[in-house]
Length: 305
Ligand SMILES: Nc1nc2c(ncn2[C@@H]2O[C@H](COP(=O)(O)OP(=O)(O)OP(=O)(O)O)[C@@H](O)[C@H]2O)c(=O)[nH]1
Image (cartoon, rainbow, N blue to C red; front, side, top):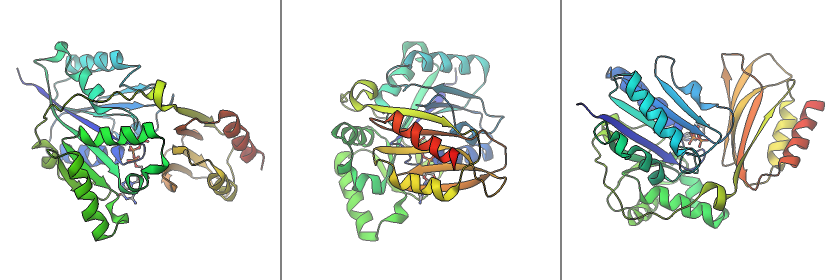
């Protein structure tokens, strides 16, 4: 029986996992392989699922992290995908705060012993986030290290933001943490598919447990706007936001036009992209110790302007 290849895409919030997934899916399509995707997002609403075309089977795990609360659901989804489709590979995009080895545990269940073969854990690192990680809580710093240590392939992404000598010393630093893994500097997670397909999964030593709910205090907050908002006021809000909000994504409409924008914010960088579909005006915030009351108040103020 042919085993279905599994790839686990890991990396901190906003490191570029969805960007990588989009690149990979294009290349897989060119090779005419049959692919399914499992996406895990912390919030109750999915923003990233748009990245996957409609002909690719997609299972979503929302409102919990697969590494702890919804592991059983991942197993059920994998089983469903295997029963319903003839697949060559499954890509699992984890939440930015998942420990890759705990996701791996689900795929290694005896249920799938002869059906799935884990080919590699790919961890994306946002190079600036890594350089400035001292600003994160100790638990998140440990999580970042664990994501790197357990990867078969580490992509040092957004590398355009470092000088050549900074890139060289970062590669050395990461090699020290993970001597067996393949380490690549990337921009917009551009890699050749064979660079992850050739990498053979090697089980690593015991991993440190970093539980997203009991230790990390990473929470989500979802806000839907009842009407278009003012761009300048929104940018003022972003500047005033606590730096423990690590990630925002969603859809926005502004009062200066009719367009909908896909909004991405990671590590202080906002990005607006015109969205052809008319999506609901909703933002998902992810951060540590989120102050829901403050967020609600400030976001409601934007609607009143
Ligand atoms: N400048 C720069 N931006 C990048 C690069 N790669 C990705 N981005 C941007 O970074 C933002 C986050 O990328 P995503 O691919 O959504 O990150 P993610 O890891 O899937 O995010 P979560 O699912 O929230 O954890 C997006 O706005 C991307 O366009 C890069 O190499 N350089």
